[in-house]
Amino acid sequence: MTYKPFDLTGRVALVTGGNGGIGLGMAEAMAQAGASVEIWGTNAEKNARALERLSAHGTKVNARIVDVSKEENIVGGFNATLAAFGRVDACFANAGVSNRWKSFLDIGGDDYRRLMSINLDGVIWTLREACRHMKARAESGDPGGSVVTVASMGALWGSPRNEDYSASKAAVIAVTNGIAVEFARYGVRANSILPGWIATDMTGAAQENDVFTKNVIGRVPYRRWGEPEEFGGIAVYLASDASRFHNGDSIVIDGGYGKF
Image 1 (tube, rainbow, N blue to C red):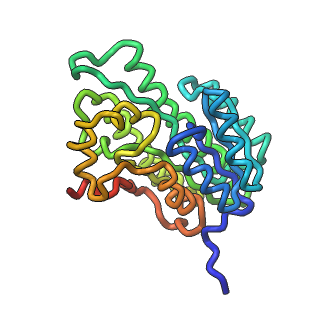
Image 2 (tube, rainbow, N blue to C red):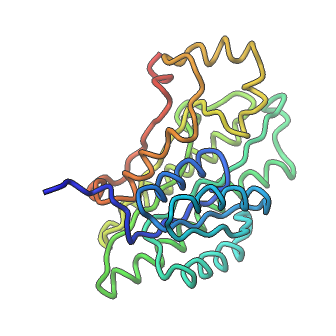
């Protein structure tokens, strides 16, 4: 008998911030594993490029414009996803932004509020709607589901001149752990992924900084940046039956940076 717990045929996955970076890396892997996939993003051009890439794998895919900083957008977006796909089996709350302040003393204002509205409020509202749907499914005799947040290794150690970002990601882990306990009775599991230094648009400036590369990336045992595609495996695992007893965990994927 063939071992097939990673087969996502018949499953539906939603990935916020799925039109680039880690989000697209996860979405593409799940499509390759047989899942139908919807991605949310705010940039129509990036959505279109990502959709073309995902469509190559032969499953049903869709890209939707959803600004997760506003609660009503998430409610409407999730309902539209359900109308299009009929269900959501795995929800990846990945959308996030970062600020880079000159000093902690400068933190505040509209940029601070925008970060919190996307990185924390948006995650809470996205997972709330996913859990609402999965609970209702369980009560109608169809239990199960996976909700996943993308936090950061900065949630564990903090980050100078980026304290608001680290705080938002630490809060996300707390939210995820609470969901893991509250919704396990409905067959829902909740886990966080904590990326290290990954080559995405968000880290573009750092990638071009030779001093940063020497002093920081030089501490990564692999001596390189991580790639978004390297999050495909964990996404497929967390969306699949292979992880059906894996709940309330914070999974660090940083190339060993934290052990150096």
